[in-house]
Length: 121
Image (cartoon, rainbow, N blue to C red; front, side, top):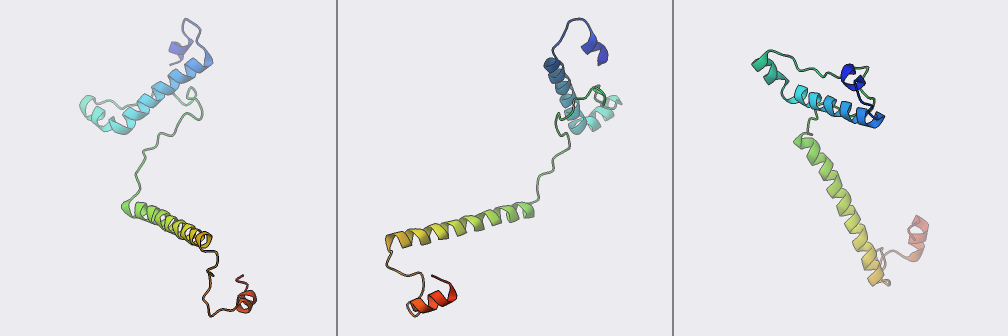
């Protein structure tokens, strides 16, 4: 790696960084997806030529992403649906109050004194 990037011809810092990241990403992909198959077919271990000293910092997360389980997805979207229903109920309540301002939010059996005493004014 060092010989390739230190060879003839000047390269800008960002160009070198982009090329190193591209090479590293390609080998990370090979390691994650095809390492077993390459080892069985050719008997070679896939290893990135970009060592720890030449690898740029903050250039990506190469861990294998495991999708969430069905239970986690149901819980996540269930909370979202519940929040949406609450928002819809609040909007409907506000719209009804805007359309019918004379209708009270409280039952007719409650007097204004009861509302003030309980803090529901």
